[in-house]
Image 1 (spheres, rainbow, N blue to C red):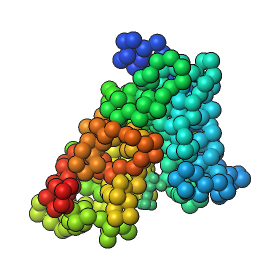
Image 2 (image 1 turned 60 degrees about the horizontal axis):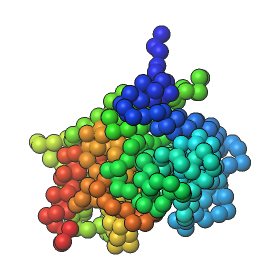
Image 3 (image 1 turned 120 degrees about the vertical axis):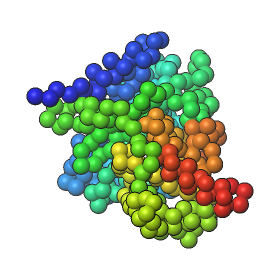
Image 4 (image 1 turned 180 degrees about the vertical axis):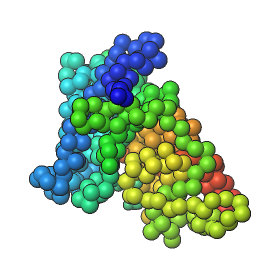
Length: 337
Ligand code: P6P
């Protein structure tokens, strides 16, 4: 009988990677895992309960909030607040940071940036959705955390991960020592280590981009898409276009099989669509830790200095050779790229 290592056992075991750790990060990751299981329960029965459809509200992005969006946001914030290891949360669902000022949390060491339920437009059509989180160490000392505690470059992350609520529910995370994937076993209610030391193939044959925006892309991006579509059986396998419209689902597939996910700048979105703090940075950390590459077309995403909570950035993330190739088209074709 195969016995799996649970997320909790793995976190404790890896605590030794942090010589000065006193267990706070371990407890914070545990709190996120618990909230993910609670959200998973609702995602799995969204079609049955009274949780489908719009919550009637509109979030800071001006997007209609689905009830499950609101529910997921509440669950993660509740878990982070009660866990006591996080002093401030930056959530996609809130315009401003949520400072946790309880006696236990106001001096907590960690900051969490989170997209509680990414891809929520897919909820009502039963397509995979996901949670994305990013963890930083607080920089300021004493009193309430400061804005600069949140606006840190991605290269300062101490941990990052995502949960994909798909055909099975998986939690994938890194603390800077590789990437590991855990599959939820509903029979015991535990995330179990199923994908140790995930590595993304250097070269892949899957490209993920919303080609509905083709006319809005720069010439360099258009030429890269044509490169992917070109038939050249003598030199390489044909590429496959795969785009789910749910970042976590597209990234997870490309992480395991090889591939590139692109959300470029367009005429209507000069900074792209995805958010730097709670989408691009955590995914970039994971992709790099798995041996891939993540840039905005010209610069490493993890080196970008944030100046606004919900700022966007163009992103090209995945197999290193594929990101190198699209960058070469951008640099060769696009003016002043
Ligand atoms: P588009 C979902 O809203 C999301 O943030 C990502 O999960 C997804 O990859 C992207 O936007 C889809 O955007 O413009 O192609 O529908």
